[in-house]
Length: 354
Ligand code: AQP
Image (cartoon, rainbow, N blue to C red; front, top):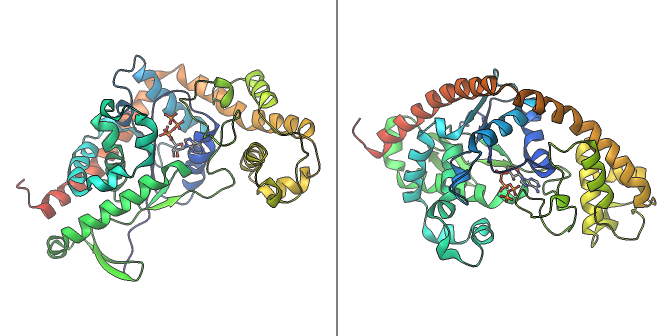
């Protein structure tokens, strides 16, 4: 039994201001993973068309996500940073995956239900097929590990289902090519061309919640800017938003058990823990018994300490769009080479003439 070579892939949509949820749920993990892994990080601009077709500032948004990657510490020379539309193989594999995925599977996707809202007939076909393109983004590199926030878990399960069905349906065609490897899925031996991707979701803040409602995800599309901390927020804005964050009247508990049924307290403690690189239990051992009037100023200081340098570097990078574009072009070229290798193999497995 062999194993797929570990490769990390993840993407972020260029659809508005990046917020603390995107940073803690995704980008911060990207940075940590690059120390010991081969990593590909993508600005998924094709995905940005799914909910809204026309974007006045698409190029600026793409550059701003790239600037966030670089400002957070991703090394585009050691790893690959690029925007999805530079590598048409993503869309080509997505078409094949559209033919692998079953409509019943897509109908279960909660993100589609949330984003399409009540008037599903008016949602784009792209929004419906989004998870299939996401599977292609990952599998066109045969990536094995995907750091994401918890909201993406269901899409990654779908990517596994797609990979599994492709492997099974084409098993007899994969074997003679010598391109597959024997893996175990549960106890089942499978001769696989595509790996079973592993989501990397752990951490104290896998789902950062709105500062105004601890039961709702922090999100770019929340109409209230007070609900989120944006990576571009200055010190005053960060301070104001944390001071105004919803809380309850009780002091913080000393044990994590005590956060149950207190979503806002749980969220702020989780944010503190993630920013400080500690567990929630560690944070509560320091702040248990304290009021929010003590905890919030400490959280403000910590958030400013972590975010201010990223904010400053993003602003500096955004003043040189030529440099950002060069990073994306270089990454795009290297990504294309890898993706085209996979696509040639997929074309051979399917039996397309080339
Ligand atoms: N609140 C969150 N907590 C933890 N992780 C989060 N992510 C997003 N929100 C949170 C993670 O950030 C990565 C990039 O997200 P994306 O921009 O590609 O898509 P998204 O999940 O649609 O982001 P938003 O902010 O929630 O946008 P809208 O408002 O459009 O829905 C992903 O890894 C995601 O898990």
